[in-house]
Image 1 (cartoon, rainbow, N blue to C red):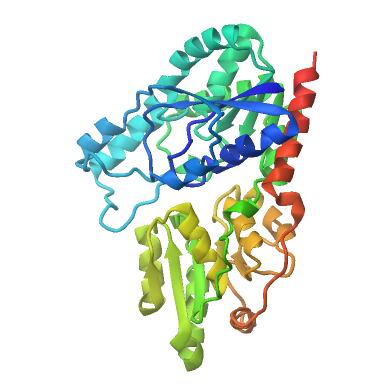
Image 2: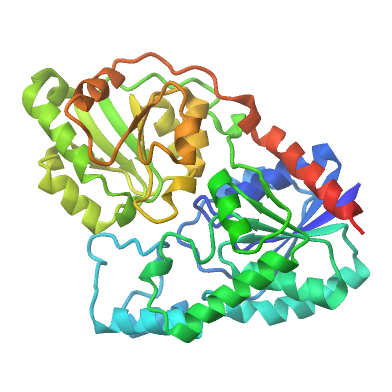
Length: 427
């Protein structure tokens, strides 16, 4: 069986969606002739811990862990945060933790200009040294780096230059095109450094992979060669063994982080008007968030008059979150209001599709997500006068049907295996 080394920052029990793509690939690649070996930090900063994810890690899977030095303990001490506080990604700030004082601004400036491309950059050189020795004794047929964090790609770049490995750079999100790049406090030097590193990775990788078609074109425009799309997907094994009864309440459920760029004031106002004009709907309606919610989003929901209809479940283990989305009346899919929105295909999209529940998406009609929704509902960020009726009808809509088998994680692992075969054979 051929061997592939996967270099990833996110690995169980590190929760959230960052590790799911390659956790599932490692689960199903052996069925397609590739045995993964995982390289990951021994002591990463975790936004969430989910021990249940370890069930997908095969006992025979080789996982190499090396210590990582990160600046988060200094950041917490400097900003007055608790030592055990979880640091959220994508600039999400929950209630009680939404400080924007000078210490936060200074910490952001330091992070933006002294940790390029990200806070894991100190792990790059030690990892290259360790993996050069490992690969001499335990050769592999290909190496995959997955980002963000995009420091992982610098490890692949170093190995490519040092020992000539066959290397795939997998972009789960863009680099300089990522949602929050504009929120970084970058000097001109740091911005040039980011863009220079990005060009080196894109031009020197044997293969570039990403998760959406628009992002593939964007990466090609930046100089990437051999770009292929392998989307995210769903794993039927994640669905509850016993089917969940649909909620009797008119639950609109969002699963995952609700960052400020996902706020939907136009939708909140539409729902508030529905509640005001339809008492039967108001009596049953609930807006339920599963996962962290930014303080600005909470303020927006309350400003629209939906505060009394809101429920917050916080982060749940993945198995529990899947049960919640299976029983939702309607699933909410807000596409980030950012420059890269046309290429955003969130992991939750595929999980939503796997349940068969109706989806209410809000985003661009000319984006990649529009082509994925089928009979589900897509609204503009500023809903029109006739959209209220369409939204109301969703809550009594039947199941949306079976998901597209092309997005089954087993099938996608086969797609990745064929790509690995091609890369391994290139001269």
